[in-house]
Length: 433
Image 1 (tube, rainbow, N blue to C red):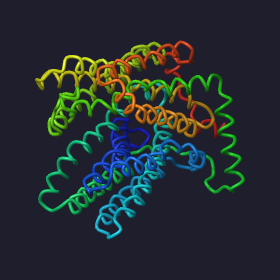
Image 2 (cartoon, rainbow, N blue to C red):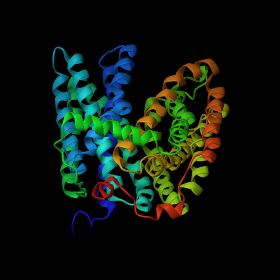
Image 3 (cartoon, rainbow, N blue to C red):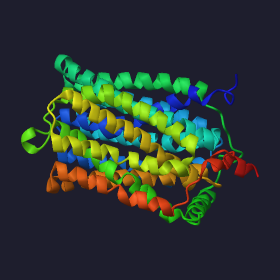
Image 4 (spheres, helix red, strand yellow):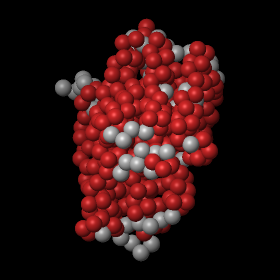
């Protein structure tokens, strides 16, 4: 069986698991590591947020990737680069100037990961038509986010155990070496399994040609009919859920005297690592098949409503303040199921509304950069709003934040099922025309 004949199920899960692994190591696990090393909170949030801009500005270099002959080669190269970076991170932990070295390596990992994002999404769109994109979007989101639960669940537990036995510095070096080995194995598999879609464009171009291409990509993007209202829709899609995802876990461990549930870190990790993980995976997969069945236009109202359910679940918890783990676990399961189910909507909206055209990969990168901004801004403002309102009123506020996207849905162009059945007009076809 050739690469092009393999079922997407043989490579979509491994491709997006690696994408998530790279992302969450930099954006989640690094903060825990720095905190355990005694770094001040202000310094941690400053550097992690600065490093995280790689995912917002990645559209800047996406036109360069448009001209590369093979998206697969870029994907595999960035996966091996990230594996090498994790190995360097393990070494950096042992240096006298460890903090500066760690920050430098985290920048390397962030930009390798952001570049990988552009290429792997381009590969996904080039290899699959619209119907397949919808059908496998659930698998895509499920395995991207399942890496989050590995990183925040198993690895944190392992790091905590090792810290008690061999010390903090050595413990984290061991964790990063293990991650590097895992990534080498996955990168090697992807080098075998990924489809080798290619374009006819040459890789060797001048700086002037590259600049002209960049200008052409941007101009082509802003001239698309309805693009500005589509970008506003992307920004608003996660306005409420983004705030809830930032504050929800803090609410679970907040003391009851301050309006929280007072759970221990172990209890929160156990809930999210078991029922939360399973519910999210099921929700993501069913969301993909649900959208493929109805088409994005007919499915979109349900997908947007699903994104409000996490806020409703946390509002219930903040109002009732249950003290039994069963009810809390059920609420967290509902939250994660709905989050996974609804998140499919914004991914497919970018793929099928914003990205299609001559520069599909670059335009998807622009759309996903806006999506990253739409997550970063709500997260950044959520702490101040929660402090001012309190937990219960805050979760009511996040429910209300879902209304603008629902109303805007009636004014954006969303393809129906009949459009999804047509073959995708990707950039390779355009290049050969």
